[in-house]
Length: 83
Image (cartoon, rainbow, N blue to C red; front, side, top):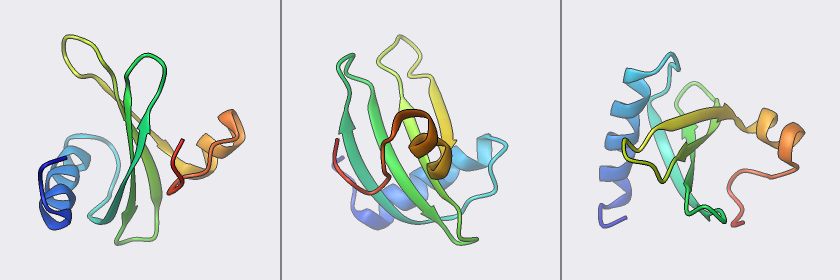
């Protein structure tokens, strides 16, 4: 959270490089914390994808990445809007 937008884009792009997602992050948005204090960030990718990244409040900071359309279908949550 202390990083600049460009710094967050770089860090989130590095995270994407470790995953199966092809995403160079061009925009990021902190969507908020859920009841379990898991953090969700939304990212827009240079290839047009929009993804939600949940960072779990666990010992390893495990993550889950969902396409924003899947998040909308599963949880009726829209990306780039605060919880």
